[in-house]
Structures are given as structure tokens and as C-alpha cells.
Picture (cartoon, protein in one colour):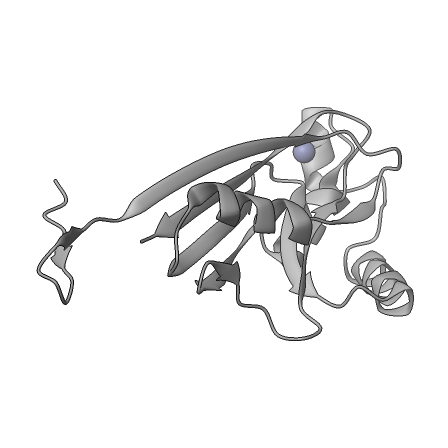
Amino acid sequence: MNPGIPDEKGMKMGMKWHTEYHWFNTRRQREFINITGLVSDAVRAAGISEGMALVSAMHITSGVFVNDEEEGIKTDFMEWAEKLAPFRPDYQHHRTGENNGDAHLKSILFHHQVIVPVTDGRLDLGPWQQVFYAEFDGRRRKRLLIKVMGE
Ligand code: ZN
């Protein structure tokens, strides 16, 4: 039960919740997709003024992160991830018959979700901050959750 919080006029204000699912099927095995527009649209659809948006990859071989929309740094991120968690045949995980051990490790490096702030009805990101979906085992349908909460 949500009892609500009285505002200055004594009216009850309740939390609003808005949930969206988005599907991706990337052309490449590993890819970063700028989803700032999707998150912005979800915030608008939620109709909140103050709150936050949770953006969460619903898979264990993909991730979500906030950083710069700049080709150089995106290439650097991919090279860094490949260095720390290289694609190779001999992961323990591959005993299951899978071959995506590196994608699980890369997912941990980038984390699976972020929370971004909403102020005055808009995403309150810094000047260079953008939200990215990070795919490490693509070429198949995978899902992302955006949950906006606030009032
Ligand atoms: Zn796996």
C-alpha cells in the first residue's frame, strides 16, 4: 500500500511506476548501442517530474553503462574488455556446451544495470553522459528493461 505524501496544498502525491521492455538483435557479436533516447522517451511516457529510471539488461551476457558517445573511447572499451576477458575456448563454463564464457565476464566488467536521475521531467545526465546497452553475445533476440519511478 502506498499512503502517499501530502504536498504543500495537502494533496496526496503517490509514486508512479512505468515499465518498458525493448528487444535487441545485434548484427555483430559485440556491440554498444546508445539507448539514451529510449530512456528519455520512457521518462516522458511515465509522466513523472522527479524520480529515477532503472535501466537493466535482462541477460547474463550483456550490460548497461553510462559513458561518452565518442567512437575512440567506445573502441577502447571493447579492446579493454577483450584484454581482461578475452574470447578463448578453454573457460570452465564451456563444459556446459556453451562458448560464451568471455561474454559472461565482460557483462560483469560493465555491470548489468544503471540508475539515472530524473529532474523536472527530464533525464538529468551530465553534459557528456549517455546510456549504452552493451552486447557481448549478440546475433539473437535479447531484452532490456526500463523502469521509471517517481512522482
Ligand atoms: Zn553462457
